[in-house]
Length: 203
Image 1 (spheres, rainbow, N blue to C red):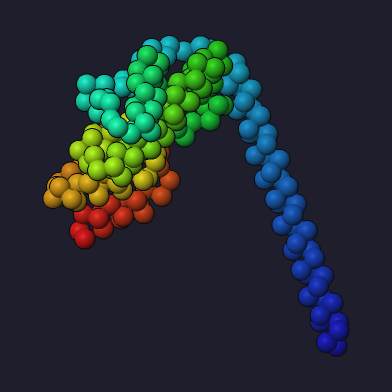
Image 2 (image 1 turned 45 degrees about the vertical axis):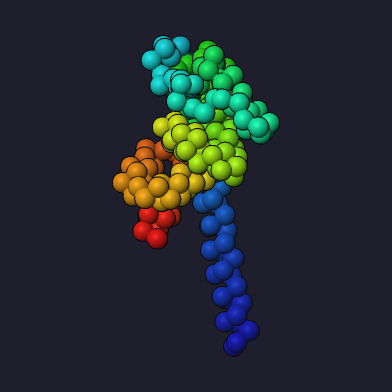
């Protein structure tokens, strides 16, 4: 009897597993069809005007651009200044398909270039700010991190280091302003980051 019951349970499990696999296949096929249909529409999109995008300008007058004794700091500065003559746009979170749908496939190459410039910008700003902070240039590091925050960087360390500086400066209101920026970014784990910044403020 026990063998029959176990056999019956095994059959039920096999039927259930087959149902789940077929359902997963249907969902996968549906998802694939939806993707290719969206891609087809994207490739047919007309070229849009991209002159009104939110271009980022490197504010050389408010950044610590003077030479220092540290070659690494100077190198990071030079990289950032080299971007001042290029177009920089934050397109974080948008796929190529979404970019083509919105702006047309003819603009994809340019937009990819602008987005790549943004990735370089926020990455080097983080390295520059950290190096300045490590070498004791707190005010200079703050100005670099503040620019990165205005660019809505998705580098979490930038916000945490800047909050740490504000903590040292006894400026909790500035940490609050920093926290207000987080929901406007494309950072993953926004709630956790806000909690971390709040902890820095309240510690």
